[in-house]
Length: 130
Length: 194
Image (cartoon, rainbow over all chains, first blue to last red; front, side, top):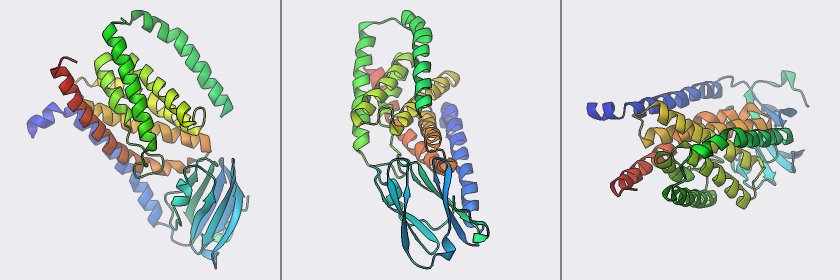
């Protein structure tokens, strides 16, 4: 074991640094995900420009609406405390495959249309419709 | 992206003229090197195309990094310059064939390939005792980080950065896998006198 560590010292240093950085990056993700559970606000951005903010806690029933991405229309579906991309014309369909997202953390991103949906904890006291 | 594309093309042209010309003059083109160059260029292109047909590696847009299998071996056998050129040739050919040339996917591929080969060459030079496993690991992580940076610039939203730690962990796995395979291949090649 000692001989292995001595022989592969550089590799182990590289592995350790990279692993520490990746795991360290996860900490704020989990803290953010588990914090601020009062309500859920979805912010829809197109090329960094805020299009819409929706208080998902106020959604009473499932509904859909269209937004215009940079390349095509997208259909967004919302229900109580959850949002998803119901339809997009992007070739990879990653955004659609994510299905309903209901907690802050990983955003829904459609790179083809330049659209990202970011969820944040909060209430509707200051909703801004862009 | 037009201005960025234009800027990159100008930068690439200037780099080619001012940096590569003296390098080309100092590089000794033996038959063996030329043949190896061709073999590894076709190998990395074939691996790149094959990889594009594979499903994503757990996260959207995440690939194992199969072309790195060939590029890392060339880095060890022929050095930085041939590996860099093969890397660039691979990106251009594969993105042209897949239809993502000068599109977001193409820029992500280019950024990932450049960051990867530069990081691998620097680590190989800086850490003489680093094996192909460690070098591949760094290449894989820098590849993924550069791709996410381009995606953030392209989409104009920093939200994608949330994916970085997850993709970093997956890059560690794929980097280790590619590095272990390459270490074995390089051992065999050194035994048969490559």
